[in-house]
Length: 130
Image 1 (cartoon, rainbow, N blue to C red):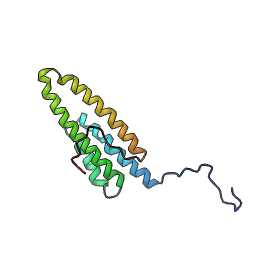
Image 2: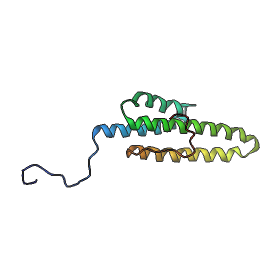
Image 3: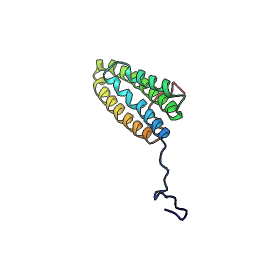
Image 4: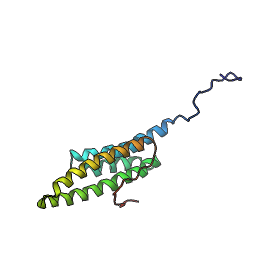
């Protein structure tokens, strides 16, 4: 307590508000929803599109991260198709494995950054949506 009798907090760092936590959570879900594409074809693009279209006007971070997630997943879909074609000359198999590993790792990094409230830009993403 200070001299006026009101309680004081010992930490000087601001506590995120409930709205900011919601914004970070929805931005993180834009990224994590892309994993549904490993189960349902093209859900890696459709799932973040749905979240983005629902929350883009409400949360600026979701507006940015939703477009980033969709750009990256569209790019990865193109890369996966090219690698699948290259299976005919054997190089496609290691490319598919490498692309899947890269997709998983970078998406997890993006989700963690979004949950922290940081705008993340994916490497190797074709910027179709601006």
